[in-house]
View 1 (cartoon, rainbow, N blue to C red):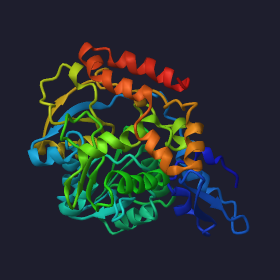
View 2 (cartoon, rainbow, N blue to C red; view 1 turned 180 degrees about the vertical axis):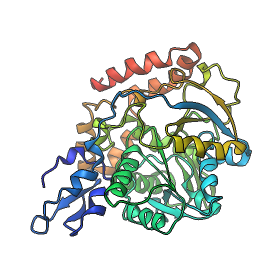
View 3 (tube, rainbow, N blue to C red; view 1 turned 60 degrees about the vertical axis):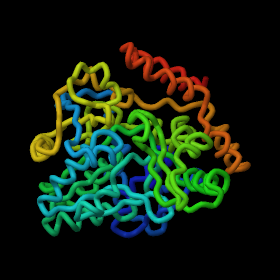
View 4 (spheres, rainbow, N blue to C red; view 1 turned 90 degrees about the vertical axis):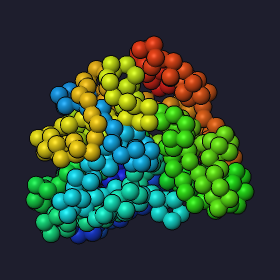
Length: 399
């Protein structure tokens, strides 16, 4: 079995489906997990190829989902969510059925792992955007077991992870009647190795040895659309200092630490793999809606008949308004993220001295500093869509 590792998204579907354990999970030089075939054990059954998400192609493909802007009615939920709290409403609907929810959470060291929740308290740890790749481990097998046990299951993740799960369960001939799939509009997965070095840098150079008690990649202490991090230590709120001196989000937005396969993502289209797609409704200002979005608003794409039934179970928890595809447009609903010519320079710098690289690149690139500054103005002028298209091409040229 031969495959292109630059087209591997790290979903682990191949690892999970292999009937003879001929695939082991390894880390590449950029810190991303990827499969390695144990040749003398491989029986060439082809199941690994069959479950690979990158065998699909949804790029630029159109569909006609129902589009909604949505805000959770509970103000506390809204303020703890990155956008409008739609994830909480969707997961509550599954928990009310006695089901379980799978989502991404921080572990004790602030690494990213998949978790399983059967109650609201544990589920709450899955809230909030997390801009780092999560190792899925054996989560697909856990989902399969829950479905076999007759449980309702909500699985939330990036489109490639959701696709990997669907393909895995199809090969395993699992009954998916009670499976509820929620994908997001993904902007790429950053390296866990770079994230680990970032944490080491801020603990030593920004927080000066203080213990991190709470960390959030998307805070609402400022406007919800801003990429503002939240950091609490035993001595109090360090958020302002962190955002000023070393912002993970600024580094993430350069895309230099993004997984290579993300630049050839096959899921950038309106043809989605989830029953419901959840995202930030970034261009809400020009959507001509009446919904109050000042504290955050979610974009919902209802993609399947099951998704419609699921959304109906959430309506009592949401303030929502119907929208349309033109108003909710985002670049990742149309085409792939261009790879920057400066990505290789970042990795050269990182390998020479990871801490110096973090110090430099966590201030962001000039392109991103300018684009983040003028984005609110472009939205007000109704030029956001045009500008994103133009800037995406400029960024791809490495300028």
